[in-house]
Length: 255
Image 1 (cartoon, one colour):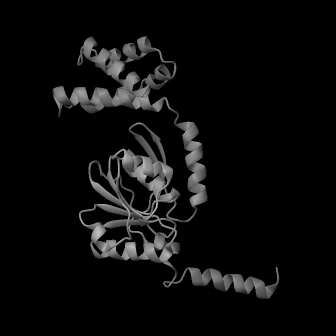
Image 2 (cartoon, rainbow, N blue to C red; image 1 turned 180 degrees about the vertical axis):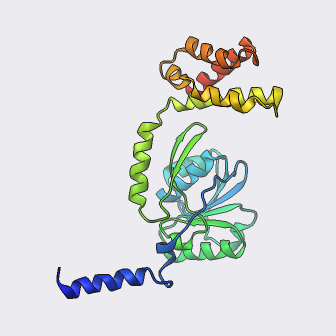
Image 3 (cartoon, rainbow, N blue to C red; image 1 turned 90 degrees about the horizontal axis):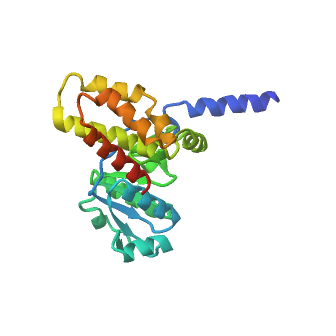
């Protein structure tokens, strides 16, 4: 490599590591799962990116308001059905009142910046699509299987890698995890309702996870599922209750 080019590359790399390097380069994050069920959330922007943000928020149970002067066909249908609130107007800071979080998803960087500034001024968490330096939280790549959520983040270092890992995990965690986790959830809810705080609960939950329950679910072998549950929980939950748990789990998987 030419000496001058080599020195130039070294200088560029050194500059990127200096204290004045951009927030994008130095981003650190603390992973959390936000509980937004039945809480008001705002999406500014009604295009394809906004549509994706709306769908993610609704899947998490959020009550979504969209501020935009246009909507995708999908968002128009959601608005017609009353599943989202739609304000056909320009964004103003007043739209933030009462919101727990905000998504700026327009194709106007200046508008996105104004949304971010207004949200931060009011102490509201804000995400700006493709502008991590304007965010107070970032949205990870996700794999969802019912109640199971696997999130992948790279701190903004490589969204492409996050997407690749998500694709790999989508193959690793297939649709069978929906009824599998529904079974585990059903057991946990029933067990805790009957004997919350019992010292043996944790060991029962662990034994259940250690059993080949997932294999039985994959084969849709309800007899095997019932036998495995009875082996661990036979002295705690009745056959009737276990049967109800199994029925509810497979019914949930079928939609």
